[in-house]
Image (cartoon, rainbow, N blue to C red):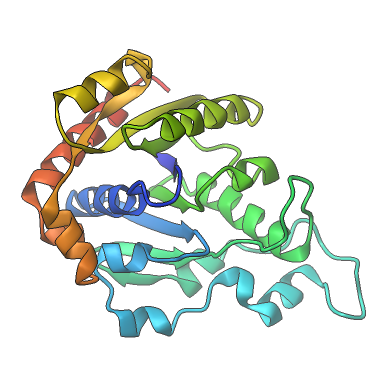
Length: 256
């Protein structure tokens, strides 16, 4: 299973990504969770300490490594578009609660046509992760649609868009679905988070096709408490874990 999780900033995609990763790890699966968000906090949601995470440098910020693998430098603007990356996930990941965390970072240069050594590395590593057939790979993507424009998530089994009950989140889902089709992604599914009541559920159901809706995660103060303390929501809220477990089962039973 290879899943890219995306959505607007602040909708709770990292909470969902981390809990999903820990559920798979609890089953004894080999799980690699990759943080592709410049505001990297997937590690905290997995259970790493702040001190552990401060020691991690995102791959796209490892200038020496990028230059070594691509051949690019200040004196050489020509670089390999197919650099060696197969050793990077194991060499640079850290493990917590049975999940390997790989902090990839993102590329600062905006625009769908961005091609630079860091982007080449990022795309190659993600492509390699997709090919790791024995691993469950979960990508916590940057907020917004920049990664879709750069094509760094081609080949994923599914995009899961985390939304809130609101018009802007619905628009994000529609945009992701449109752009993902051009990348050959087979399915774009939706998880509705921070759902407060039946009115919120009805709002989502009337705007998201039933075949795309994976389920609801309800507004939960235990998850907020976990975030406030920089802890994993998996260890704080049995309710949220059970809701995400049902969503996980639906992901696994879907035809992709």
